[in-house]
Image (cartoon, rainbow, N blue to C red):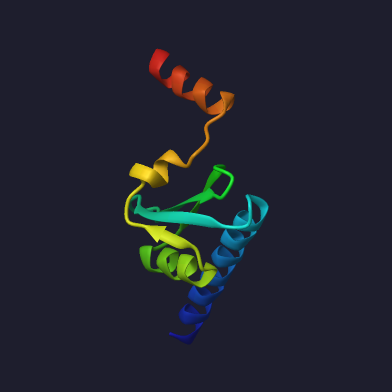
Length: 103
């Protein structure tokens, strides 16, 4: 059991460090939402102060929640409303969205 706890702690610490690095490089802060994506784990969607976004995948929902808590970011229950409106999309995203719609 101790080995599993150590492994979990390392994963939480690594994810928290990545979240903090994202926040630092995107305006100094970030906000997140944590979404279960099935057997592969849980997705942590991050939105930086500058509107840039990114994501990470944690193996479990509990690890994801622990990581965002340790990183000290604001966590939203859903990716909608004012939170979603903060995301800035550029030409790359618009091209990809159009490509999905067109074919």
